[in-house]
Length: 200
Image (cartoon, rainbow, N blue to C red; front, top):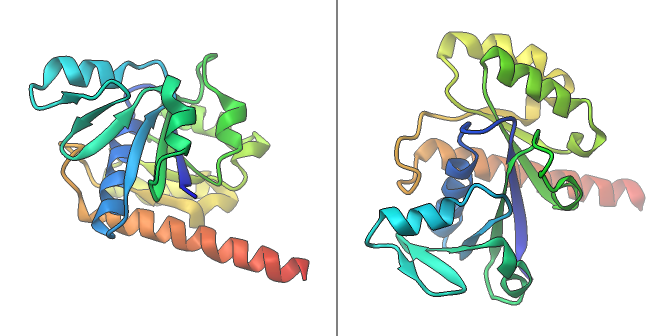
């Protein structure tokens, strides 16, 4: 059965899709299979197909740089595939079209954030919602001298907060992305084990 990692962003153009693709590349680097599932209305897949000649249209999915990217309407079919991981991209969490219920049901939830004033306030809105209690947070485009100032704003989510390198090409794996995703999966596994122990 496939494992799911869900991504959302605090706003548009914050790098949510980039982080989702980096997660796929990390899974593949670890010797497992993964695919991308577009759970938003950004039309990223359609635009990818229009822009790059190397993008292959396989009807159910588009293949680019050895990554298989599915549109939302194929979500049920993806479940029946043999991927180790399905990476879901829900897009901007502050849009009215954001599928909050579906996002909340995913086992690993990652929110992509930024440090500009509007971005920080959007993150604060999300932190006030219970569905983000077990989420992880990746900050993009944060200068080194601002990172220490960001952490206190995250309250009890500091251990679940990470800072990404600047990634120019989403389809080129960044070593920092490997470290972040492996740490998130490790923390999630540790939490599940502890919850099981607490139950027994």
